[in-house]
Image (cartoon, rainbow, N blue to C red):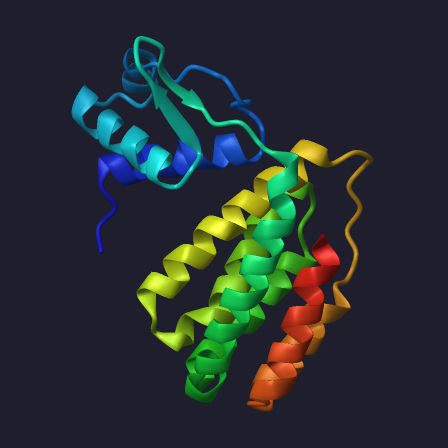
Length: 199
């Protein structure tokens, strides 16, 4: 599928919001965005509507569209929803995993392990989780999981303190091993434990 101008603008703004480059409350001005991305106002409006639908922006009467706030109280809900939905997706994904899927999962795992900074790791981490779950072939479920992963990433960047250091993730390694053996129950148990540890 070809990426549209609106797709490119949405993806760029989404990543900037997640890592905090566009902080909560920041006004998203259509004219500035259109100029920055050399686009007309139509794809910009489409991108902003998508940010709103994914909970990353809020449109207010006479105040325009702004980056939505991060509510510290919602992280428990985000984690529990991720546990429920990702485990559900994994239970359907593992029996369907092909050798090609495994190659993609391993490649995402390696990228995650080699990450050199927090931003790179976060993107690779989300890609790894989606590579594990995508074989479930349930697009609505996967879309909901992707939204929750973005919310979790925003919380992580908003509350992160300290310096980044690369380190192996034993849970990720265990997940790769479990899906390679097509162990559905074990994969779900590891994933459940891994996601709850994030909180």
